[in-house]
Image (cartoon, rainbow, N blue to C red; front, side):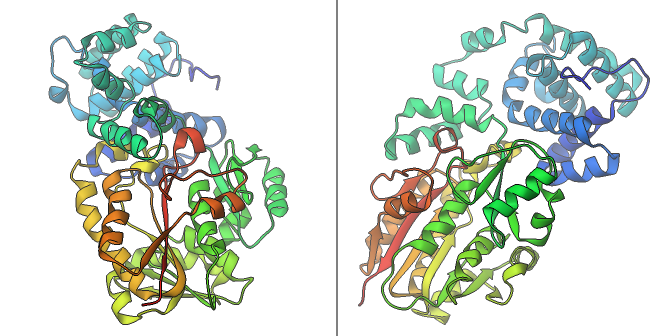
Length: 470
């Protein structure tokens, strides 16, 4: 298949486009996660190689730019409101618009494929509507940015629509950028980074980086060097789960920002013994496994807590190479402080959060999150942090992290906790981060906020606390 995705004329739907359509329907109708639905459908359809790559690019690309495509489609439906278009037809129009405007698929190819898909999956008489709308989309292909800008109520509204983010998320990012030492106008590059497919980051755990590189080369997977962490390797394309080392847990798939969090906790200086660590919110186990790769060299045990049984099973699978030093605990993190006071030397609280820092990887989640989610989650985050701190011994270290830059879930939680906890001291994690990373890592007010545009990682927040003797 060439870059256009063109196929010879036929009566059957193109399998790659059909997979992309089925994923969009699963996401929009059933609330499925694209990163789970897509691999299942690729396997079921027996797609591989360039066909699988095309289906993947079409699926994720359409989801990332859904807001932009909807704004364009709404201007091509002959006065018909977008909410009055059948959901399954709208998904086909989104796929067609993405091909026309982002993939540069020839118009005759995109229209033929989408009309064929419509007639085969829905009905013959609906193909005409799809054809007419996509023709109007294509007629103004080089003018849509100008049209959307001119019709937007403000530059901020245009920014949100054209970059395909809900307005409230854009505003949250702007506020966070300013509080973390950047300019609010930097939001443009953050949004663009969220719409850029991320490379898959691998981490060497129970193998060396050299062994991992050799395995990647032997599988013929193209790779590049990491941006942040020395034990990482970035796959330019290909399925990392074909690697035997990933299948066994000797290596893992883990964002570089997530790797940095584990390294900061493991390498931060502490006073006194260093024998017992806690990962309070361990599921699905990536950070626990990376922590275990440090702990195994130091005669340290790790307690991995997770309140949900199915996620604890994922933790067990992730830490299998280190099972002899990791103890699994099924239960609420909010009770650990009372049950095990001052018991742990190092504690990680990778708190449940809105996940708005991982929009590169989970593009559909930007449309399912609500503006009130961060405030609701902050209550749980503070409770978990309070419990974890009670379980930390004096002289030990605690790292609080989230995969979101939203201030309500990050700085505000830390500031509220410090105000009510005299024993707690905020420690700047930047010196430790800079020691373990490939380059200098900056903090602002002794807290780190990573960004996808500057750090090529998810937008992870990192704060480090220690406990003074009472």
